Length: 579
Image (cartoon, rainbow, N blue to C red; front, side, top):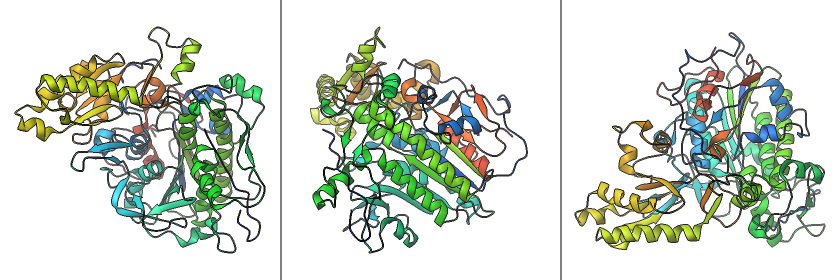
């Protein structure tokens, strides 16, 4: 059950998919149309907003419902919208998605292939931002705790290009989730912050000591940690608009596959009594905050403070602010993309964007800043709801939970290993999309790596929800043309030898494999997971809509152009703004 407890604000010193076709050949700058003005002043501050797990269709679905005139409606009036913006790699997860946006290259080149992958040497699964040398730093951190850093990222980001070209420029990244802010922030930012479940935003020792000038944001006048407790905090998470609006947008509220089928309807009682919370209640609130829209609003408040207190966009040295909104993914995972809860999140996000717009206008000035909004990936609707709606009826929407997936994969691999006269221990790990082997063991038995991989690939291909399998040899073999098999190019873009599985699986369209028995998960190369929104608002960029196909790896070079810096010449992406 989703159990949320939220404290009152303090007073004084009292605490308180159908399959998308393979990617067509990229057009060159010479081939693509010019849609922008020629000579315009460069913005003093560029802001990138990445809304985690936001599908492109949300924009039109909510077009007549946005409550603010200065949020998504402002983006539509002032911005250039790209109707055909896509993630170009196969394994559509948060860490690789954000890293691709920030670096301008696909995961095969920036190294972050998944949120977690199997470390062969250590024999454990590692986090994309894991760094044993770093510790958490921040107002809510008690004792030595593991930190995060971009050490596993093998490429520099747009923030690093800016710092190299203009050392006095400032680069900050903020997001509730560490994997989002760390990947966006890059190697040498001025600050990277994410929400810690102890109750406040933190950074790590990789970056620096926690900045003293942010102290007032976290502490009240008596020196007590306020975390996100604010005056006027609502006691209940209710719908922002009337229930009939949500029913028109997404259908009924209750669904048995939302949050274990238990409490999954509005309203959500956030605290049950007025006054101060006990320590256990406050800890529960801190833990559950990311499952509401309010963690994103807390991140927005911090981003706004960074703009004001660090005078971003106030001088001739252009600055970069990277903001990740993560509630769309945490809420979307639990309730799915067709839920009242996620609809309410997006309606509130519209207000968050309006607040950001107001802050930029007040502190930087009209015509002095640029804002780019996109997403790291989309998500498929919950299979059970798709079945009821008759979507994907030809193939049948399918959910395969983690327990069944693990059993099926291990049984298929064990049979293949037995036929090769290898012990079952040759299989060392079953991940979300593939399997890893103890290659030393198979080599000692005199078996070639490629023979092992091909045998297991054939065994896994028999599973009813597996459409195709790719071995590490196939993904690394440049002699095989990209067009030889469907989706081969997208899986190659997600492959790093040594980090990626020895055998990867492409699941059949409209299947959700390896997750929970509830909610929704991304991770496929299909359009519901790869088609994302993209808006660019900037001086000299003409408002309107474009239909040329662009990719999230195009965003970093676009930001570089807006900032007036030269990106590396070996990027996978190219600026969408041709001057």
